Length: 77
Image (cartoon, rainbow, N blue to C red):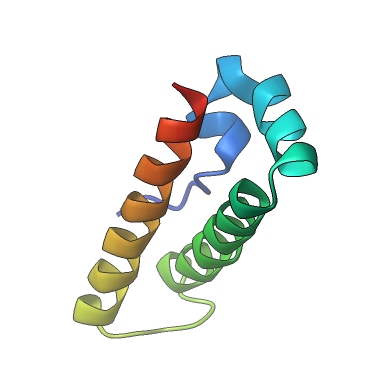
């Protein structure tokens, strides 16, 4: 189990400037990025046992985060 936050700038280090610009210029991207950020923080709290949760719930949230990350990656491609 990882206790490392999966922030967008860590996931896409070469795309930091593009992420910043897309958040400003594209409302849909900004919404997806914010959803990713909120979900990522919730998962991090759960993994750190600040907010304990069932394993099945955590795995479902991780799948949601991966779906958002895939959508973000498409914007950055």
